[in-house]
Amino acid sequence: INTVEFFVHHEDVRRGQPDWTPRELLDGLADTLWERLSMARFLLRKVRVGVEFAREGTGDGEDSAYRMTVRRGTPVVTVIGTPAELTLYTAGRRSAAQVRLDGTDAAVEMVTQATWRL
Image (tube, rainbow, N blue to C red):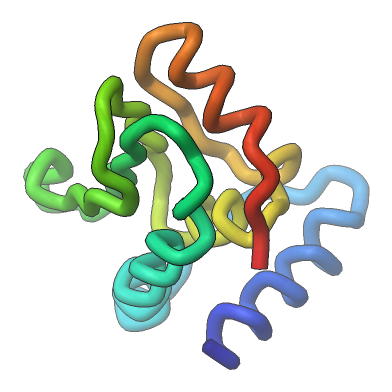
């Protein structure tokens, strides 16, 4: 948990600066953040649609293999991004996180309007 908290606060400082750009993380940190995203299951318990995270940026051409169901339900919204961006999104930094949401307009609206954060 501390790794996630330190990462989020570090990014808060970085992204508060003008002309910031996302940084490339070491594979180990990206993998750790991806594993820690399982905490989203707790945070998303009140969302009324299914939510899936899809990991981008693995560099091995098999991004579709990196998916995580964080809330079962129908319809499903897929939140797509790197582990860093998905972590920021999950931590409530939605405006700073560079993610894409894929799903029906109504389902995406339910996810974006829901209140959930660390």
